[in-house]
Length: 512
Image (cartoon, rainbow, N blue to C red):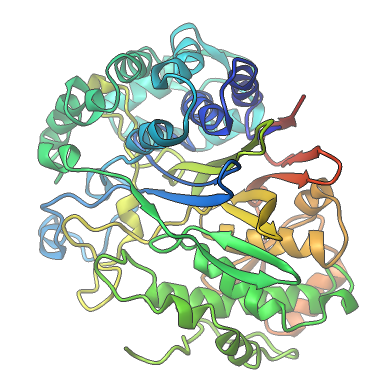
């Protein structure tokens, strides 16, 4: 079974599985394809995180494929550029792209097929063209302006000066050459060879901070997953610098509540989940950073005692004022995919440029759209997540799995920047607490709290909205659908897989 946000990526992964590839092989093929066919959300200039259940050993592995800040990226260097905070886009937000290294690192350890062969579907789409799908076309149109700022970006993304329309064919010839180099020469082509040379030339031309050594020294890291129990399941996430711990803290609080007694999408239901997430988010904003630079109290944050203390702070009759204060004592767009193979190897995989279009900068003739993940740092010298040389920022992308009796039963993820941890908690609760099937759990109307404003999708009942206003929430209508998701359920007893894919995206779940 394969579930991705693009039919072309789903088809590419199925092709790899039929050729004898396993779940990891198929995931890399799908991710590379998405870097072409969903180019504002992901790319080889971005980062990657994954969870992989190895069926033969019963072990779960986590890979942190996030890139680090340049060696010259200090708070003073950012301020010297004339800004008092990290910009949202542009050359100062560029961190080392981690995806290509993560792909090859994962395949060298777990893959069945040759790494280069996995990139062939992506190369073909980039060379010969792909049909732009409706959701992608809409996002492309909405972000034309960021590509108009830079000549190389406009040449790659705005044929004829405008974003391509849905149904039109689009090619990325420079990206195709880059992918071909990586397929033929491996990751060294990206981090040491011609691609690296062009990225550094471009960065220097635009007064960026990246240097050749930043690329050469980059390595992905195998890490130990973090988890919490929720209603008989063990929910697993990638540890910090990922925000996966935020989802686990939210679930820890929700486990204290009798959610089944609340009508789904009633004011009480939406209020409870929103308030729990606000509390979790406050702790995350204060503590999550690169663990190589900060002592993060993971076990305390995930303890049942702390969850109970946090849950007791929720006022059922009033929204907490924003910003929410943390209680721990002192001491934006993405693609997600999941695949289960015939042996039940399972991968939960996420690849991202951060904001739609990342930094907005295609690095010269390299074809690489550089991510703006550096925007995840802060410029407060005393904050755990302050930018520093070689440091990884707080990361929004979070793949997840759910285990029962030491085996995965659900592989899932939710796209959408800061919404992702709330999305994880919401779809899990929809499935477990309200008995929805996977597709219902994904389809259900969504809501998201950001900067003190509760954004709601159009189907949320008007009666619920009015009651939330009376509770003190500030509401706004979401201009676009909130996030996206894919899920696969493994029925071990029957030998059957169930897949679901979010209608908010262009993708699909397919199996055989």
